[in-house]
Length: 146
Image (tube, rainbow, N blue to C red):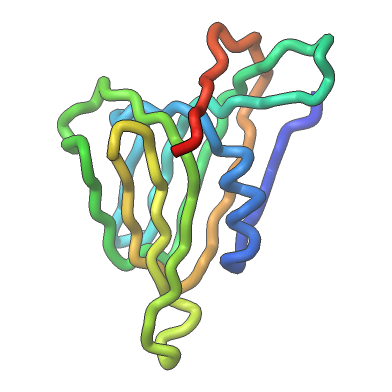
């Protein structure tokens, strides 16, 4: 078993990390933002899709760490909703409109149900890392185009 470890250091890297996080599930109680360390960390279960029809779709325990965070905001849930499960749809990055502040911007974790996590960051610096073995997914999410 090969464990995934991805590091994103520029906005273009987020496309790959976002693809690996699509349909990951994270409990609100498994997330933390430490302002003093400028760091957000979340533990969740990411969905591992395969192109081999003979292989089942799996889930793996993974950690997401976002560094260089200057502020964090949440939308669509409360920090006390510890049992709430968020389903990640994508990661997006919007550069700061002031070129003098580059490479700063807004990194958003877009979740199902109109929930999101919004981070003001000095720059893109994050890690997605598998933590252990996989298990067969009990359900596979389906998405419809809007």
